[in-house]
Image (cartoon, rainbow, N blue to C red; front, side, top):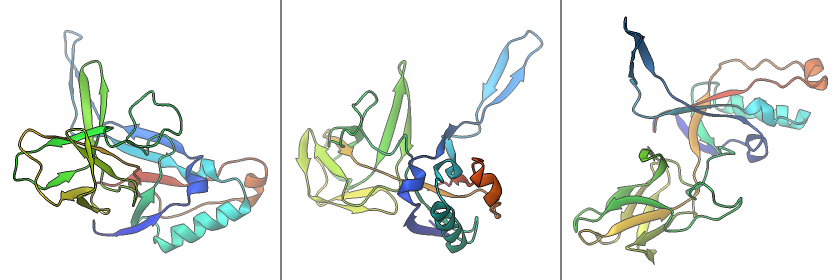
Length: 212
């Protein structure tokens, strides 16, 4: 990814950030009152306000330094979504670690060795499969037909895993992992008022997801 720094936004601030996924839907209302709906986006795009995680003047100084080092909106970086940063399925108890069986990522054909990490969001018989481009180093677990394997390498900058040998045709490939969301600042100016901060006002530090 061009214009991207492989650095993580400060964790202690991101854990109290606010935000989530956004979809874009174009809606046309017909004369009959019915609607035609279409989305120009294949996937969702996440946005956050990291200002909600600022609890001290030291946090403000940290964000300012991080903002300056990224040159405002110029360079992207990793962000740990406080609500969605693990492969574990919905309903899992808080703190449940990833397991190699968490997410299906493909089926072997006897030739392909490279597979993209993905996370599946399913409800009511429908699903959205999200590419995961920024896995956390050391967190990725893989299984072939339910059997854990360590015979692979990981590109932590793209989310591609490469097996030492191609999985057999028809083999189910699954993965478990922690991951970050690639984002950038959604502003070229930070406006922080110390008097307002002392009175309890939250400074704004908007972030927007960038395509991997």
